Amino acid sequence: MIQIDHAVRTFRDRKQTVQALQDVSLHVHKGDIYGIVGFSGAGKSTLLRLVNGLEKPDSGSIRVAGQDLQKLKQKELLRLRRRIGMVFQQFNLLEARTVRYNVSVPLLLAGVPGAEVQQRVREVLRFVELEDRENAYVSQLSGGQKQRVGIARALATRPDILLCDEATSALDPQTTESILLLLRRVNREMGVTILLITHQMQVIQRICNRVAVMERGKIVEQGSVLSVFGTPREEITRHFVRTVVQDQIPEAFMSLVMNEQRNQRLERLKFIGDAVKEPLISSLCRMEGLEVNILGASIQELQDTVMSVFILQLIGEDPQIAEAEKRIDRAGALRERLVAEA
Image (cartoon, rainbow, N blue to C red):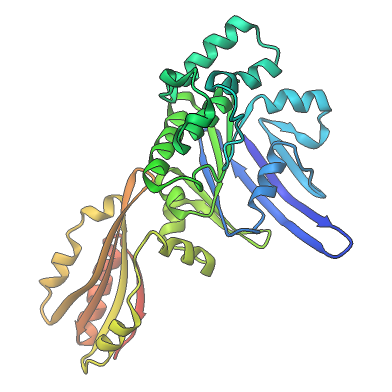
């Protein structure tokens, strides 16, 4: 649905040159909920503006729904944009107008007949569970209700693609959860492909199936949510993952462990999906000559599955520890040795 290849975008003024995007390639397939995460200034918003044609790359190609944006005439680009819905961080609604009017705006601009406009407005308001607020003014709504209006407006033209620009950043955690569940319904029940940008890894964790991590105009890591959360390669990715997956040992606690005069190794284990069913730790505890100490544990839901993280202290002679590590690897757990022998 969205294919970005080697995109470069540079902004220049009299004082400086900013490389907003540097050789960015990204492929979003039909049915994806694809998240792009990064700090402010990473280039996320610029990338989103390339997809809807509001920005043009200096080089590289942008294809959306099979069409090369650089080759489209203005009328053709406008037609394509009707297949792309947009949800904004600050809602971008007309506060002094009704919910019904706000949702109807893209249909009116597209020249849809009045009776059809009213029918479609009621359909999308029912979908976002705001049919009883049709005649309310936007200024009377809560933040969560405003974002639901924004989503309804984006869905009014029956888009194939939904672009979300920090759609939950202005919301409290409970409201964020409800909006994320709504976006997942949009994806599953309407078949809409979603590309969202965020600086909140919790958003990626809750609803995305693929993720790209951006830093200074580059995509430094991308892949399935399971692979990126399970084995993050880059330091910035590990930073984002740590905001939702507690897999670190505090330094003070590490000092206490390492002061023990015993042969030991510390291991971080990650169990993803079916691997969590294996009674691995119970098996390790029954090994002769091996002591197992669980220093920490956590569990997270990812992409409709789960990931469990354990920090284990393995105490014993080298052959017993080596056999324990073999059992861990055979069980399908992702293993990372944190500390070698004391």
